[in-house]
Image (cartoon, rainbow, N blue to C red; front, side, top):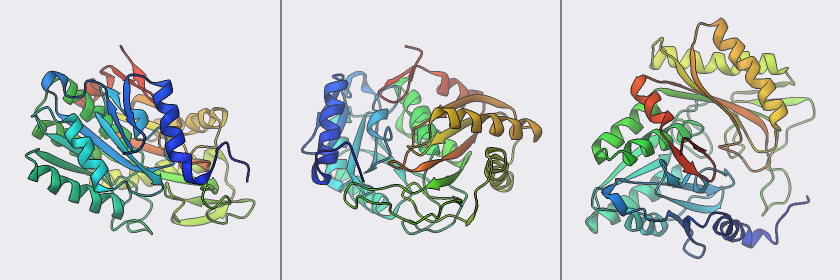
Length: 334
């Protein structure tokens, strides 16, 4: 397959060099694989650190900056970063107020962030951990015990980052992050497989004229395969799955934050058309939408498809969502 790379072995390092050249407000250590907001320890803020396998850009390095993450640790493609990266990031951002680790629920990420937290605490850094597990498609997968962490990661990092920017203490920032995760649910659909640079070919086989309902962000299987559906039918199925789970586990009738997310290869023309159907379904079901975000934010390399994430948001969460943010992948109000 044709890819815009030098070699599979250098693809992550090359991307980090490009990130550094494009965004001089970031300190990018290409060798150590750590991206840090410049001046991260200034102002006595709580530090926010996240990370995971590369291939999901702009998650996570694209969300480092004012009002969001203090640092990110990119691993190899679809591979967890290692504890040394996470410890280095924690030390780089700790101002004495503690550090929050935002961890997507994948086995490698969980184990390595847990180990890094122990090492950081041995060095005198207070650490809180928040697990993101918002995917309603499956309970266990190839990569997880329990639900996968997907689109809600963006909501957690933005809202917790805004609270940290305002000077909230570590315990409050962590509590808000957990509240966002508990109030959020996601469902993804694949229209085509992704291809990793190392493999150079699709990571799974999806026959022409079929789609995968409930796919994971690494191409993990979902609930079922079906014949191709219209955008209207996909929206009804996806939003229905999310709302059904929210009603059972996080009931409420308040407004939602809505993320219509592309998996990497679906153009905005299709995503906005799909969002029109998502908005129609939500209106028909009496769910008010307070804020909407449409685009490629939590991707899976070049996978064709989309995901829907909804978060029940009270006035405080909406205020923090609206707070200024300035990162490579998300920016407004400043």
